[in-house]
Image 1 (cartoon, rainbow, N blue to C red):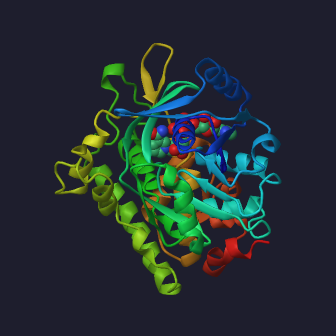
Image 2: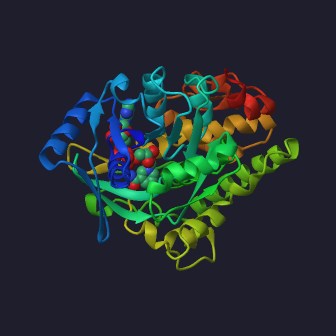
Image 3: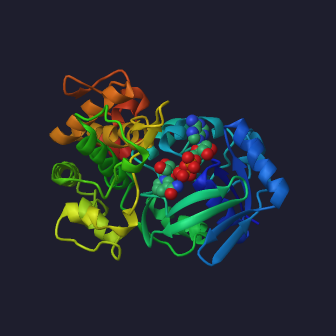
Amino acid sequence: MPKLTVCGGGNAAHVLVALSGQANWDVDIYTMLPDETERLKAGIVDQGYIAAQDGEQTYHGSPRQISTDPAAVIPGSELILLALPAFAHAGVLSGIAGHIDPQTTVGALPSRGGFDLQVANLLDVNGLSLCIFGLQTLPWACRISRYGQQATILGTKATVDIAVTPPDHAAHVLTQLAFIPNVAFTPAESMLALTLSNTGQLIHPGIMYGLCSGRENGIYDEANIPLFYQGIDDFTADVLQQLSDEIQMMTQRIAALAPQFQPSAVRTLSDWLYRAYNDFIADRSSLKSSFVTNAAYAGLRFPMRRLSDGQFMVDFTARYLSEDIPYGLVAVRGIAELVKVETPMIDRIINWAQGLLGRVYLEDGRLKGQDVMTSRAPQAFGILTLHELLTYTASRI
Ligand code: NAI
């Protein structure tokens, strides 16, 4: 049987193990966290498999090996899936480099911005003839119900954009991902298109900024924790619209400078919402109403941290900033600098968020802060022109 290795031990990893095991892949798990490895092994010893519950349907997969040692699980894998937040990609890619067989497919679910640049920087892409792919989003909303034993698929996205490098390997990757049921993967033109079309980088920091700037020290009772998506006001909707417009301007500029760049996968925020949540939105009359009346967002609240007195404050270290700023907005801000597009709203949000995160990306309006090198802006990889950006992955030897 073909073998795949799932990197990670969280919600998405549980679902991938169950689905691929059911579809007759030999599955191994690589985690960098020893505690997770022990807990996963304990779960498997007790039950014998990991199950994913999707409505009435249950999928079962039994990992052969679970290890923190890449030499034990990576060799022999024809497919390596990173089911991780983007801030874990570099550590995991560095860990598995040197153990990957030629012609392996390495993909991230989801990729966030600049994933291809990071892979090309850390792995011998050309020497090993690797195939890289990224998904625009995770195909499921999913949660672990019992660690090492059971996950629940709460919802499956009908269509998910995928970018493959080199592009002529797309059919091969889609065959490898055929074990994922009920999802139509739509090929995006390039990893650059995927970087620009990452809507999480707009929605998450945009809502955090729109609803929290000037109110960073707000204290909430548990019953009054604000709704995240459905709580947006006119100001926040305008912030989101401006972010979307800036991405569109950047996309058009790149297409004008590089005719081979076909930007159809880079949708406006409204178009993305309607495509992703077609049946869930009751009122499409405005961007604000499309969020507020979106049933898929019902009940989802702000990420919070509990204070010693039992009250709550917004958690500004949550992934909505710690993942979506360095691996999202900073990555596209770097691209804007390469193609000389002004991005006043992206700049405003990065300036606000970097203070809360204790990082410096923008300095005097330029992407030259001390933390740029740990982001996935092109500049972190020494890329200073659009041509270098378009040819970086292919040119790595
Ligand atoms: P999770 O938090 O359940 O699992 C993440 C896993 O990453 C951890 O279990 C651990 O194995 C690994 N990890 C975390 N920090 C690490 C580090 N510093 N070094 C090495 N490994 C580390 O996350 P989940 O839910 O599986 O999500 C994966 C990705 O999918 C994230 O980017 C998330 O934002 C995204 N996503 C998740 C959704 C969901 O419903 N679970 C929905 C949409 C997107």
